[in-house]
Each structure stands twice: as C-alpha cells, then as structure tokens.
Image (tube, rainbow, N blue to C red; front, side, top):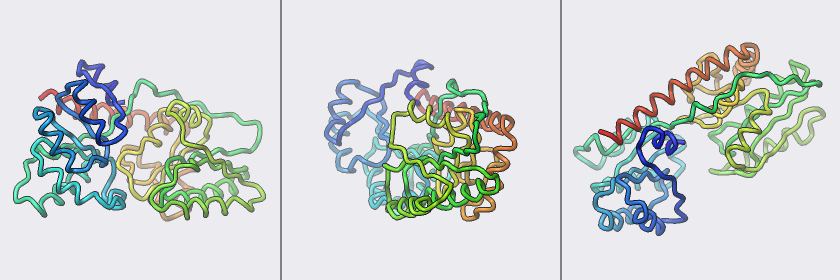
Length: 314
C-alpha cells in the first residue's frame, strides 16, 4: 500500500519479502536503496552491525505496528529497541503518536540523550482509491452477517463481541452468522477460540463461520458480503480490518483504540450493552455513518502520505 503511494509521487520503491535475516544483504545489494524499512521486529540487533558495514550509506528503519499493551507480549521488544539504537544508521518508526512518545521514554532509560531523528512517526497508509459506496444487502431471510476478523488473540477481544452480537441478533429476531478467522491464532489465543466455538456449538439458532487467512483481495470480497463489522479491541494502533470495512462501504463498530473512526461508533470494550448500542447506531445511520468514516479514513491517509513523503524527501 505504501509502496504504491510512494511510486505514484515519484519516490521509487519496491516491496520485497525476505525469508530470513540472511536474505537482507542480497536484496539490498540488488536494489541499492537509500532507505530500508523493516516491517516489525524480526531482525536480530546483531544483524545490523553486519549490514551497516556492508551498506554504510543505507538508513535502516524498523517499523513498530502496535501500541505498548500488544507490543509487551513480544518478549524481545524492549531489549531489541534498546539495542537497535546502538547502531548509528538504525531508526525506529512507531505507527502511532502514543507509541512514538512511549519509545522515547523507553530509550531514556538507557541513553542520556536521544537524537529525535532516530525515532520517526510513520503512520499506516490506506489506499483511498479503492473505496466503494454504501450498499445495504437486502436479504430474503432474517440473517445477520457480522464480521469480527483478524488473528485470534486475547487483546482482540472477540469473545465479548460474539456475546454482544448474539444478544443484538436476539433483540432484532435475526439469525446471527458470526464470521471470524479461525486459522490464525496468536499470543495465547487458543483458549479464546475454544470459548467462541463452545458459545455457538450448542446454539439452536446462531452460527459461527470460520474462515482461513486469505489474500487481501479475497478478504475484501468477504468483507463486502457482511452486514456489519466489529473491531472492539483492547489495544490497536490503526487496524486494517476496520479500514477494509470502511473501504467496502460497510458499517463498523470499534473501541476508542481505533481513533480515526467516528466516535459515535465507539463501544466500551468490556460492556455488551455498549457494544449493542454501537451496533444499533451503525446499522441505523447506514450510508451517513459509512460516508463519515470514509471521509475520516481519507483524511487519515492523506496525512499519513504527507509524513512518509516529508521523511523521504527532506
């Protein structure tokens, strides 16, 4: 997504998938870039010592995709952050302003002075040229299809969202089809998935629908078949699933963690009644809510592109 945006404004960019740390030198030698963006924490700090000698003019930017609560579940997070900046051409780029400030605090525990340029705010970018208009699905029965997608993790908070969706469907006298990604389980998410399955296993009316992880375009097609999206998480920085629902012209309910979405669609992530009320508002507002979120996503992405372009051109 970012690569296409940068190329569109004349900043030559390529996306490469490195199988492991040892692939990086070959790819950098092939392309001879000025900057290399490492998406998430997977390169061991010692590797940068070798890479810096092999490619002394390259700036290595390690992107951080999470807020601290989720990031804390990665056992190497703080250690590697403190070690990355031992190497002069290595930079850290959180994708949220809160994480940007938190990284500065972490670094202050080791370094007397941290050059502000070593920590860069680079938010997520979402392509706004793919946004579809709102179109409510007219079903010939009383089905309600709700998508609560993403990896199964405790901080994703899927179980209470499933309970709220059941309660909402009961009030609306509809049969709920609760859609999840059942094959991507991370961060001790197995008990969460087991509980969700048990919740629907004996239901006389409602159904759990599990989908495998899939290519992004296939996922967008799946989202397009939903009535409503839910992402009432405990911790988020951007949340591409919520953006996908907005892009497909669908209502979405979120927690305040996803702060680019309109506040009227926020729900308390520990309160089923709050989640139900947000579901009602999202459905009732229909096109108005979808177009409001579309405007907010466009605004977010435009600002995001400015951060990326400014960093790479100045």
